[in-house]
Image 1 (cartoon, one colour):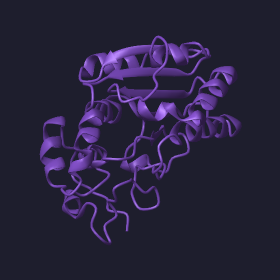
Image 2: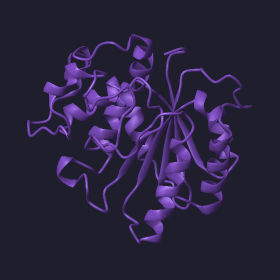
Image 3: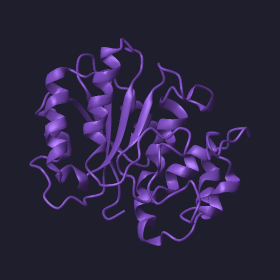
Image 4: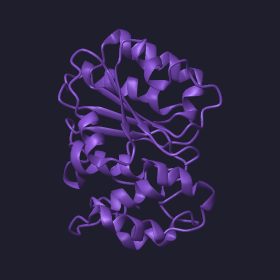
Length: 233
């Protein structure tokens, strides 16, 4: 089942109501809340993808690496017309397409099945390289990660490879809520910059600042935006 919706687009103000239709995952309420504004700005102002172009070769790809607590993601997909609001109350129940981690084989607009943290950024590097090899130079790749999952070693390898290969179609958003167990000298932004990335920070709740940061020119280099969120959220 791929639950799509032909309804007109909803707006940011509708997101709390849509999230309220989903229950049973209170453990990850904060994880959902910390990504809500970033997800909305990306899907509303930045990504070149819609329900009509979800299979187009030249579409932008969005990869949710921080896949736990996907209620905000499902709400945004619903508001943008990918999902029917009628499926939201079934979230997390047996037989529902809306699992506790998004499944790319079941949901339109979802590019990867995110489960264990730390895999989204390496996948994003691979997708970007694949698009380059196929000559799809207009397509961009956006990956949303949490600061905690950057403790995984696979991310450090991906950061280094992307910088050295000059993957300027790769964009990463780090939702930084100070949940990393180890951290990095100078913060996450400095870690990426040291590997040759274009790197900037923005208030994770400020839509104008996020949109400007996401669209900042970065020729010849991958780009990272560290979106600051409240600690523990």
